[in-house]
Image (cartoon, rainbow, N blue to C red; front, side, top):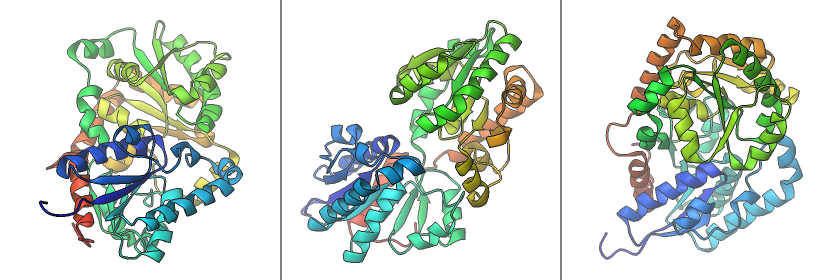
Length: 392
């Protein structure tokens, strides 16, 4: 807007996915307001977009109960310092990007001291899955929620959460990268099959799933002679994966990097995957998958008491039906994984129904108007311009 002072936007991201989301948001914001100023906390992607992070994002990228306890003094200090930095030079809007255990604590401090600063939460916490009471509590310190999943606005309305709009998932902008070319489709449909093995991107997932995945792969190799097993590994857990593979009777081809991973996705006939965002990536790629999760006894105890959903798999939640088979905790055994996986590898009626359902996932997620980054940027700027909206 001509003649107006430049807007200052503080963004706080706490993990790699949030870093990439923040960088995309920054790019869309700069397209609309070239003079916008940024501050806050982010990683390498946001740094490349011009953010000077208050401290390394790795300081707060801590997962799991025990690691959080070990790092609690440092995390509390970072929360206090981040809130103080926001208050020392107040922005036109504060944008929280995922990592709610950290970002929401900062937001509560900021809201208490400066209730006039609009606060937008980019990525809804999973209030629809567990601890639903968080939604209502958020109303006191979050003005608007930008949702990545199409069912989340209705969930917040039902639970008494803040106003919420579906702005689209960043994967929607990458559909061309996820979908196979005719040559890749021929590999996907041909023999021998290319089979993806995705044991997760966190050390705890690797620890619990690699043994059961290794035995499942060995049995699948006997059932499907010549099958090519491909394991895309995230760099920070590749050493743990390589160490675990030493005990596997059948070693998959380990690939690194986004390009190699996407090539494997476009060629794959089916996948065995840890529960998480990768299940949505597989669905949009048109790759049938069996989903597994195995955690500690404590995690299983907590999940049984707090998780409120019939399914924890994102494509199932989006479709509101259990299409993607999921084998969790005690049910996560090589025998049961192989039985479910084989139905998706072979040309069965189950595979055909699965593929038809995956096509509906993309339809449910499609935006009617702007791209995900553009819609999110428009809402953030409306708040920066003083419109602490209570609707749309």
